[in-house]
Amino acid sequence: MKLRKTWVMLAVSVFILTGCRGSDDDGGGGGEGDEGISAPGVTSEPCPDAVNQDNGCIYLGQISDLTAGPFAPLGVPITDAMKAFWQRVNDDGGISGYDIDASQYVRDNLYNPQTHAQVYGEIEGEVLALAQTLGSPTTLAILEDLKSDDMLAAPASWTSLWEFEDNIVESGAPYCFESMNVVDWAVQESDAKSVMAIGFPGDYGGDSAAGVEVAAEANGMDFQNIETGPGQEAQAGAISAVVKQNPDLVVLAVGPTETAVIVGQAAAQGYQGQFVGIGPTWNPALLQSPAAQALEALYLHSGPWANWSEDTPGHEAMRQALGDVQPSDGYTAGWVWSYPLKAALEEWLEGDYEKTRAGLVEAATSLETVDYEGMLPEEAGNFAGDPNEAAFRQTLLESVDPAAPTGMTKLVDFTEGPTAAEYELTGSCFGG
Image (cartoon, rainbow, N blue to C red; front, side):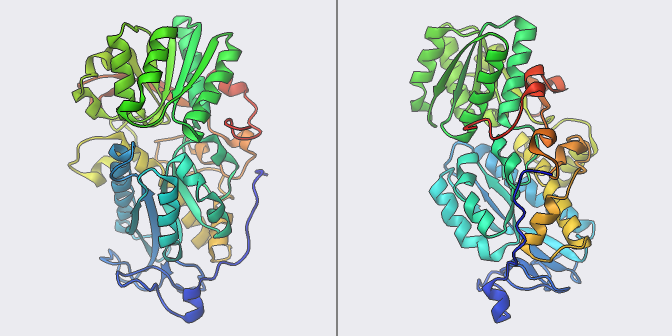
């Protein structure tokens, strides 16, 4: 069984003890639903603007980077996609007599761990689970609270630590496996001999760098790791390191703004090697930046799933639900991340579980597969197995294509390189 603790203590909120719904005047979700459900964020009353007036309501929270942080260009579409995902669930009748509200309790974390913890405290008593908690360091700031509150959460991040946490329902390969696959690909395609990892401090850049280092050692490559902070002005050291050391491959684990600055400035100073940015390094708006030419020439993007344009039932449902929007793979990510929580809610409501938050966590850890409607293989949703056996290790590679809706065209489909395939995952890649 998975090396996770199973929390089975009852979570009965003060709202239930007083027989009241949430104290907010905005239609809050605290309270006790029908059928013996004893959990905050569940009510027998319909959701605001309910699709199904005879259904009760389950409130989900979202904590994202919505304004000032480095991932706001992705956080906004992620959040909107999640709203659209749950609206589609409601349009299809809801789940076992409940509609889902993922709009009422949305908060901005500014990509700041302290802010993330603060706004979590504001909504914790009003929601059953978190549809989104964006960022690795920010989610780490509330991880112990998630455990003590028996709160299930879908992360908008891919650190390998999530493989070991019962309260987290992650989707896609972790940063470290993604980075291993990038290095293996570069060795196979171009016989790369040296690699540099550039990333933010913490579990995002750190998990990626750990994967790069493992793959570099496996392939006999020279390896260097450069930490860099967010913001255009903070990239001088990283740019200087690339130009001076001239590695064959640079793996980026930063934000889109930092990607454009590093690639553009390094190219302007003569660097002609290969950049590959993992996960959230890309934004199609970069094609309108001064770095566009350098990105077309030197940059590839690695991702945990195919982009907006892919032909799967899930991608088609996403595009239809979102309607006339500017394509962004922030939308794709928000949509994909919602499937495990939907599966957990279905299992919880329809199965023989305590109808508490702890029961929902137990239901999630029983899942061996998740139907991602083709956006990921079903086995990517295994939350019941041993982390080393259950962790999904396949990623994709894309090339810049200004004519494509999100500026990217698939170059390599789902692939697991030899380093990721052989790696023994006994703890998070970053920190052991």
